[in-house]
Length: 171
Image 1 (cartoon, one colour):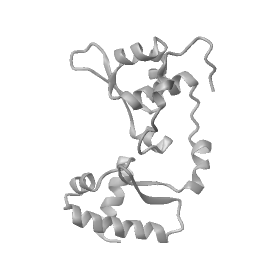
Image 2 (image 1 turned 90 degrees about the vertical axis):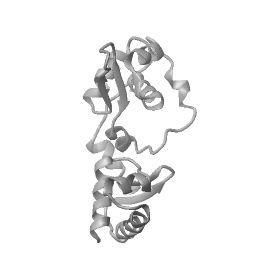
Image 3 (image 1 turned 180 degrees about the vertical axis):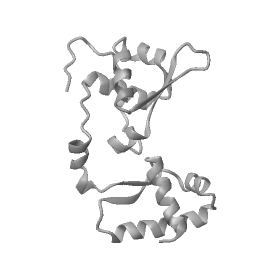
Image 4 (image 1 turned 30 degrees about the vertical axis):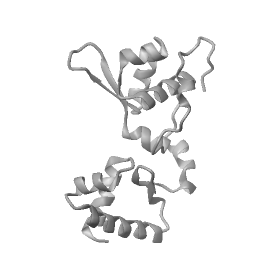
């Protein structure tokens, strides 16, 4: 494999999400045409391997991901115990983010404070203080994209963003 293909592989691994050719070119310090050739080389290399990873083209760009036949290991090796409320809060952050914690609480209710703490601890959400110090900015992390393998969020998820009721079951 060429040095550029190795660099592209490292970029895709480190970013953990789909990247456009332009983004890869910027990170690699190369032009788009050369990066496109490097991607073809990298994809051919992975296609000939009988390994657990693959490089795929998504609507958002190119991604290094686990092959479908190994997806069962994700749940086994990286278990996530999130209740329905936390999952809905995570969906709200993914769909609306980055957003402030204040906006999230307005959207999801006061239980969102606990959900955010849990989601930050599990590495799915990044929380950083606003410059004026009043609230926090919330956004999903690369781990979220890797774990849920979403290059784009499905349409129609807004129905799950309503505040959690006291009778809402947990998973």
